[in-house]
Length: 56
Image (cartoon, rainbow, N blue to C red; front, side):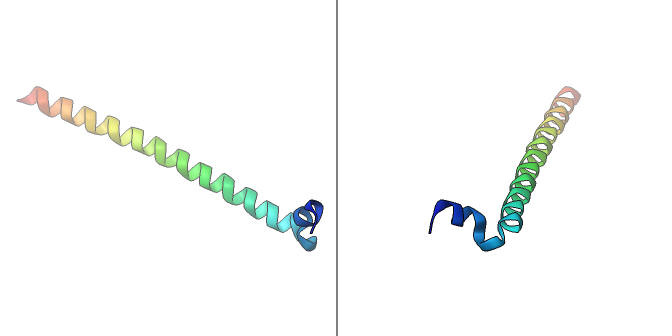
């Protein structure tokens, strides 16, 4: 099996590589959204802690 045969995937290369590409894009997007949400939650917790500390 040659490298070009491997990348051609027996005629299914378009479907296989587009599936890999789409999966990669979705996984990166999920990571970035989770990271953004984590930062927002940390900021909310910090605000609540600061607010509760100033009340006592």
